[in-house]
Length: 279
Image (cartoon, rainbow, N blue to C red):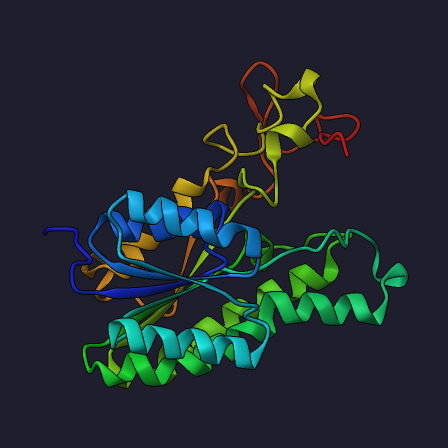
């Protein structure tokens, strides 16, 4: 089977850096025309230049996908420029630096985390569905969540709660849109090197080489890892896949608490003292 996105149009939210940009670039390399919604105004011109230099037909729009009017304008520009939409990647999400107990969390922090991690899926998906349906050729919606949507994460309660919500949203929308041939799936990455999470800079240098012992494949993720999963879910490789999640986690979730000791053996007991991270 030929892996191609020729003739397809994809929208990637938060496509200015990290996982979102890697996905947009991968789609473009496979022949898709790509629209990117990016909130940071300083990234817009460099993004346009980079995609043009790569020969990818890209529409880059400054937009806050938490805002209904901004999203409506993105969809309008996609319709005007490309006349269709086949793939939607809801990539935006953030912990907003809110690493604290529920007792110390403010209501405004909870609301902000809800808006950026779950509510925007409603705003963007609702706006995009009519344009996807109009093409009458099915489609693929890919929600980028987190491994935290499949386990408990202390001091990160709100983020974890809303990532669990992404899973429910994905499953319900997969059923709701199945009659139109629109597939809905989730990618759940483990800790991934990105602008938002600069993994190598966060880890104490003296334990950098052993810090990923809890991940069976022995390393943290790269944006390209999630981009590969997105390619699978966007193309006909996954034509009979909907309502499910691809865990891009190096086997971390499967390990369920098992980790390697310094000599390479597996243990369920604690072997690390102190905090892995320098912050």
